[in-house]
Image: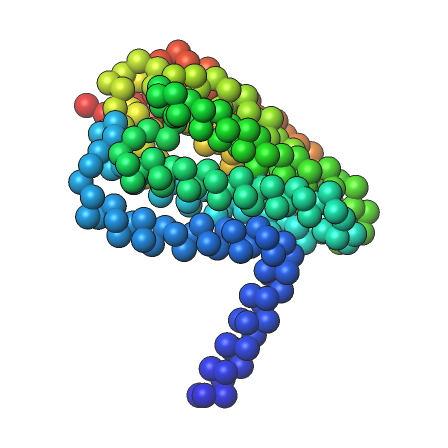
Length: 276
């Protein structure tokens, strides 16, 4: 039993180190951000303060999960970059900037939660200044997805199926522009009509159900790098590895769907209305 346990532990360690080696900076930052969720969750259980009807720690937790997921997803995709890219100076500077920007976003949202104020749409002079800096940081963060899309597209040594390669390129390429478009329409808050509170929002996601919520389109935009490659994996398995048209069709429909949720929110309509 001990032999088998040690063997399994050794295999896990080897896999863990190999995974981390694909993109060490994103791996360490993503892991750190996810580990921060534990103390944040504990504090949230003890702190009864609220903003917009939900805990002051609701947004910090969501940001920690989202940024950790984004960075660790890029760790997976870094495996498919051309061999020389990760050793270039420009890439090293980019990855450092992305990691630091993600940490800054997480620290700011947690800090705002700690003092019981809004991290976004804060009308104070300091709040507006920090929000502007965080907006620049967000651009830096999502720029990595565009760089990955371009670099994977130029990697001629990939042994993945054409369907999966197409899905990686399209999903990554769509993420930054869609994110910037959807985020750019959120000016003074994410509500359009409705009760202007998140208290009765959709479970976990928090989307309001009695009016428009601009976070819906923003969610789908930022997760294009997950949805499209996930379909690519399914399509490659079910419809055939060589067929890329289903992936292109899905990516087109996903783009249209994301923009539709944006127009729906601006019209003051809920993505999933409350029943009764």
